[in-house]
Every structure is written in structure tokens, then in C-alpha cells.
Image (cartoon, rainbow over all chains, first blue to last red; front, side, top):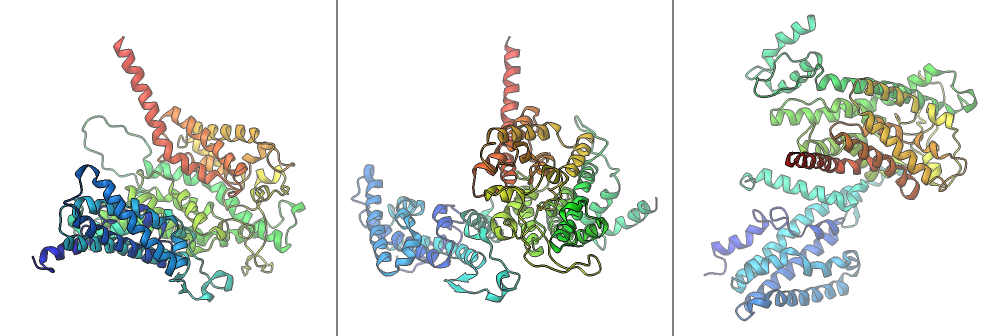
Length: 211
Length: 391
């Protein structure tokens, strides 16, 4: 099978759209609510999950034939935990402020349902290259939703994007304008409603998901 | 019957295939607004018929709200006159009743228009999209929303909150009659959490704007006036007498200040058999008991029973808790529902330093539990009958 065959393309594209981990499988919601109040942590979180999913998929896929079936979950957890620790330390070294914002949620990637789901459902049955594509696809599918939610929440909740002021100063009430930031957008409750809206729009667009 | 003839003549234009069939639901809403529909359901099984349908019963609620609306308008003008110096608290009621009322009307009217325009606009769009009739529930919600916000709430914020509540608290659940939460209270909760600076504090309760031709007093900006609950939360002495809090000449959300106006509404609602007196009574009992238990915690010149006269307690008990859609259907459930609302509202007020007012949160929380109360009372009844059958 060639590296970029049609099947492999489907493995990669599926999670981005019709099999999206958040919008369709409704996995990984907890972190999607917790880290999306601003765009920057949302992107960092999305990329971290992508990297960890991809490489844990590859590692598990490489050793899948030697893992005893009865302790496979433990083996998977060890691999994921090792990768999470590496990513966490890299974040602390290079983007310290974001890693503080993400706080426990980087460590909690270990418990992210998307990872365990992909390892169990895909990496245990498929070769390393397919597993890599599947991991990248699922991670990016997760990241896309995080970025959409983070974008909406940051611009409406703080009036900024990546920390840069987007809404002009003069528009605010304190400076004689009319505008006020929506405080509800900074709360996780509103993130849940935005995720629901993303799912709503996604299903309205893909009618065959309704069934 | 001139109006009936006009409507009948217009009907084909709006029916399926007519020129304006896109506005069919709007026409249907207007027609059934004026006249009780003459079609009846097909006879199949048992049918219960009531002389007044839901559009008519909704009207009673709006009528019951009129005293609170009128007093709210007067109070907007009165509070304005107090800060501009046109009135003094000693000369209460202020001599210029008519001027105060007109000022309040001018401030209040845009809020009512915005609330109805946004809410009904969404309802009509959804009804047209789903090919359903426009439901009448928003007639009450639309007038409740302006009554439970501070007078300085900006219109665009009100519009966003109304749209949010109608879409996410009502339409996604299936429209009127299917909602879990009271849409008017969801509007307020959204405002409260999204724009706290516009919903609480000292600066939002008195309108300082100058309106030409109505009230010849100068404009003042950012008027500071604390509500009794604000003073309690800040640990200050309450500067309003019980007489003022009962008549309602205090700062507060527009419709909630006057106990007397709200009680008139309560009498109308209970007389028309629309609101459950059990919910109203048990809310007051729960609130009174809890206020009595927690009476040592708080300002000293504030009697425990005054808790029931300030803030949104009365308004919530009479117009919000009794919403037939979001309250329990079983009679036993109504007692527990009301009692817990009253008790929780006072607990939040007194014990939670973050929120001076607890009525909104108490009612919303109990809305969630209403089906549970119903479930237990229905189940208890089933068990009782099952036992009797076994004997």
C-alpha cells in the first residue's frame, strides 16, 4: 500500500470532518471547555494533543504484537504518560506562561478519551504509518474545534485575539463608547454552549450525521 | 364584526399557495390573538375543553402585571427626580406624579419594544421555519424581561440576552411549553453573568438622563443609589424604611420594587386560577422561616420579615415561580417547590457574600427539580394504588 493511498487519506480526513472527535464522537469535552477561554492556550493544547496522539499511536502500533492482551491498557497508559511528561516539560521550557494557563490540563491529557480511544480502536489493529496519520487527524480534528471555540470566546469575552486588542478602546463604556465584553464567554458554561453550536452547525451541514 | 370580516378576507392571501404565505404564521398569530379559533380538534378519545385557551390565559398574566408596570414607570421618574433634586424623600409621594410617570414611560418603552421585537422576531422566524404556529408564551416573557432588569441596562445588551434566552432556553427545547427554565429568568441570568457591571452595584438603578419636554430637571451622570439588598451585602445600615420598601419607592429592578402592586397582580392571577396560590404561599412561608432563622446575620435595623419586601422576592414568587410550564404539576410538588425557592433565595442572600440577591438563582435551580418532584409524587400515588389493588 502506498503512503498516500486513498484509504490513508480517509484515515487522515475522517476525524477532521465526519468523524470529528469532539463534534461527532463527543469525546474530550472536558479539556475543550477548560482551556478555550483564549486562543493561544487553545492552540497549544490542540497541538500538544496532536503530537501526543500521533506518537503514542505510532509507538503502540509498533509494539502492538508484543503487548499481552490482558495488560494492554497499562502499557498504553505508560506510553501516553511518558509522552505527556515530555510535552509538559517542553511547554514549561519554551512557553512558560501558556503552560501556567493550561495548568493541570496538560497532565490530564493522559485521561483524554480521544487518546485511549484511538489507541484501542486503531493503533492496536493497524500499522505505524496509518496509526500516525490517524493520530494526526484526530489531534487536528480536536484542535480545530478548540480553535473555533477559543476564537469566539476570546474575541467576545476579552475583545482580544492572541492577547492583541481587536475591539478599539473607544468602543468601550469606560471610554465613552457602548461596548462591554461578555463576561459569560470567559466561563466554561458558555464554552459548552458554543461547542453545542459547533455541533449544531456541523450536523446541519452534514445531513447524513443526523440519523 | 368589522375586524373579523377583514381577517376572513385576508386569510386566503396568507394560506398555503397565497401571495404572502411566507407570513402565514404571523397572520395566524394575529388572528387567534383577536378571536378564539373556530376549528375544533377531531373527536378521538377523551378531550378536555376549557373556556379560555392559552392566548386568553396569557392575557390575564399581562393584566396582572399592569400595576407593577405602571408603578415601575412612576418609580423610574421618582428616583430620577430624587437625585436631580426635583423631589425630596420627605415629600413622598412626589407632587409631580404625572411628570415622573411620563419620564419613566419614556425610559421604559424602548426596553419593552426591544424585548418584544427581538423575542417575537425569533419566535416568528422559528415558527415559519418549522412550519408551526407562533406560540403565545412570549407575550408574557416579553413584558417580564424589561421588568426584571435595572433601569440603566443598555438596549443592545437586553437584545442579546433576550435572543440568547429565546434560542437556548426555549426554542432548542421545542418552544413554548417544553422549556425547562423560565425564559425571562434565563435572560436575567445571562445579563447577570455576562454583564455584571450593568446588572448590579450602585450605579445602575437610577436613570440620570435628561429627557426634553418631560421632566425639566438637568441630567446627572453615573448616579449612585444602593438598593436595600446592596446595602445589606455591603454590611451597611439599610436606609429605607419598611413603608418605603412596601410601597416601592426604592431603587431596584423596574417592576420588582412595589409589594403592593405585585400583590394586586397576585390577587388577579389567583382569582383567574392561573397562578397556583400554593406556590406563592409556600414561597413566602419558606422565605419567612429561613429569614427568621438567619435573622442575626445582617444589618441591625433590618427586621427579618423585611427580607420578603425587598429585592425580587415578591415579584419572583408571584410571577416567576408560578410559571405553569416550569413549575411542578402535582399539588404536593408545588408546596415543596415554593418552599425551597423561598428558603434558598434567603440563604443565597444572607450567606453568600457574592450575590446580594438570590431569588433568580433559587427559581432557576428549582426549575430543574420540578420534574423530579412530579416524578416522586406520581410514583407515590402509583405505589399507593398498587398496594390498595393487592389487598
